[in-house]
Every structure is written in structure tokens, then in C-alpha cells.
Length: 242
Length: 252
Image (cartoon, rainbow over all chains, first blue to last red; front, side):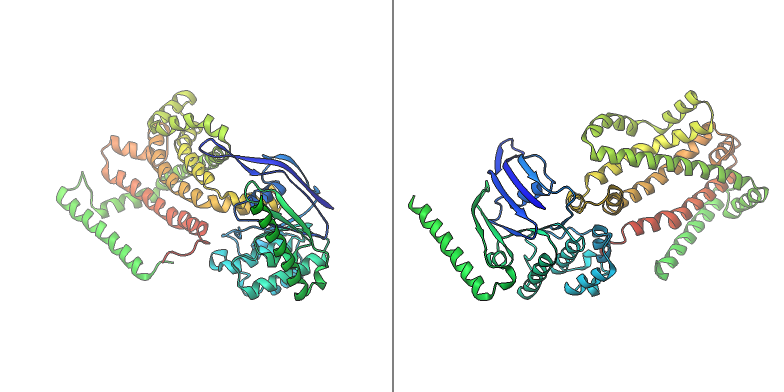
């Protein structure tokens, strides 16, 4: 399975009548089992790109080839839970085929066991985000899209959830697209990093990470980050010089 | 459920109403405003002969049919107009016309065009309720949360499941509001339709009582009818409203 994204442009008509270019030509592909990370400044068009890739926005120039049968699991920036359904119903409605054991396991990992029957209005944002993660994992997706899934969580929980995401990605042939502004998350989870420019977004650099995820220790991660920092530093001096 | 204090207050309020009525009856005197026992006597006599239940039953059947018809058709049209811009543009002038058409005109025209029939009466009542149902549901549909639609679409929820679990709960408060206001509208209009063109029902009886200036009979029928409306409101409409809003955090 393979996801091919070839967007040649996307413009947005504002209420005032002007047109704004949101995306410059963007082209990349992801294989099954790969984690692609989109990193870019906020407001650069990452969410627009995701909406196009997910088929929510068809008004763009270019082409996105997504396996038609692919199941999608998505964690939106806001949790987007149904306030009138309990936590468990929220997950089951998106994943009707999920086995009880699998669901119990997910709730245990995400520490949601005590909240099964609660309504989303009774949850903190951190808990609601975990429910959104449980929902995305429960569908056993072929394509997993995570839009800033760890934002506004405390470090310990974010670390644990990051490990869970890594475990899931390793356990099934799933292709993952992660949007984040955290270089740390990107380096720990990603196989290929796509650095995006400010609006209109284009890919400034594509950085593959050669070391397999499970053998990436703290030392390797620090080294990758250092080399990335050097590279962005280099870009900046280059730009300043020109 | 409501606290005992509220219940006591309600009873007190009802007792006060009876007291004022009784005093007024004593002051005004017999024929124009009969006392509560005189009205009760007529109620019992009409109930014993079975006439009260016959007329009440006929009216309730008309209410049920017209209400169901108007709610289902009106909700469907309102939903379409809220979702599809073209339907909204096409339907809007009709809606404004219907909203401003006096109930009496609709009823009289229905009887002229379709004859003094049951179908004409029910259709006329339903048409009076229709536009408000459409307007309320259109508002509800416009207020639907797009981000939840997107969620349902990304997770490939089948259409019916998405409608039932994503859309319908958002519309439920609007449906409840429309049902409540609609019911009170239908209660009022059904009597006019019966007065003008049906041989039975509470409205017909009130018409007869009016011609005979028979105030006890008029009050006996209208108060029984009001009591039935009150019971249906508390037993059916209010629980439905509470259920539709159950997931909302309680107001302090």
C-alpha cells in the first residue's frame, strides 16, 4: 500500500474577494510501515494539506492517490468527540468491529478504564485527547493521521503515548502521517521528516532517518537533533547571505 | 423529578385559580359564569353519557394525525433546506407565504376545495403547523457542527449511523422545541377546524354551546380539553425534551 500526494496548488478565496495561495506545489509519497512527519510553522497550511489528503477538501489542483479500501484512523487537533455519547460509545461508533479484549487493552494503555461511561463534557482536554487516540487506534487503521496528537499533554503522559504510537506503528503495516511542531516528537517517531515553509507551504527539506525506530537510543536522538539544528542554522545563514 | 415544594406550590396555585373563579361566579351570577360545581356537574353528565369521550377522542385523533404529518414532513423539508442551498432558495418564498397565511384562510380554503371531509380538516391543521416546523429544523440543520461531519466522514461511518449518532442528537433539541410549540399551535387550530366543518369533536361541541349560550357546557368541554393537553405536555413532551438534552452539563 502506498500513499502518493502530488498537490500542485491550493488557493483560498477570502470573504473580501481576494485569493490567497495556501499551498505551493507539494509532492511526496509514503509506504506502508513508514512514519512521515510534517513539520512547519503554525498557520503554514498543514491542516489544509491533511484535509486534502483525507479527501475532505476536493477543491485543489493536483492529485492524491490513496488506496481506496484503506481504513483511516485520525486524531484531530481538537478531540472531536460526540458529546452526547459516552467514551466507550464514541470509540465503538467509529470502530464497530473492535473486539472487547482489544478495546479493554486500549483503555488500559491510555488509562481510560475509569471513564468508559463518562460523557466527553465531563473530561479534561487531556483525557478527551486520549479518547480520540483510542478511537483512532481502535479502527486498526491502514492510514493513521495524527494532527498534533500530543499537544497540551504533560511530558510524562506525552512520552508514554508516543511510545504507544510507536508500538502500534510497529505492530501493523500502517502508514502514519504525523503533523507536529515538536522536533523531539518528530525525531523519536518519524522515518522521514518533511520540513515545510511558511505559507504558501512547500517542502523545504526532506530528511530520512536511517536508524530504525526501536534501536534509536537517547544518544542517537540527540545526534539527529544536533545535525538537524546545524542544517537549519546553515539554511538560515545561507538565506541571510543571499 | 420535581421537589415536593414545587408540587405544593403548584397545588396552591391551582387552588387559588379555583377560589378566584368561585368568587367571580358568585359576584357575576349563574348564566354568564357558572360556579365550579355547576361545571363539574355538566362534565360528569357528559362523561356518563359517553359524549365527552367521543368528542375528546375525535379531537385527539385529529391532533395526533395532523401533528405527526406536519412534524415528519416539516422536519424533512427543514433538514433539506438547511443542507442544500438550492432547496433553501427555492423553498424560502413558499415558507414566508405559509408563515403569514392566517389559519382561518387555510381551513376555509381546504373545506371549499376538498369538501367538508376529515382529510381536508387534518390537512388544513397540518399545513398551519408545517412552516414553523420547517423553520425550526432549518435553523437546527444550519447549526450542525461541520467538524463532526468531517470526523464521521474520515472514519467512514455509514450514512445511517452518522445520521443517527452524529446528526440526530444535534437536531433533537430543535425537534423537541418544534414539537412543543407545534403541539400548542395544533391544539388551538384543531378547534377552529372542527367548529367550521366537522360534526364532532371538542370544537364542534363548543360551537353548539356558543349557539345556545350554554356557558357550563362550553366550560366543561374546554376545561376537560385543557386538562388533557396539560397531561400530555407533562407526560410526553417534557420527558422527551429532558431526554434530548440529557448529555448537556446541568445548569447550576
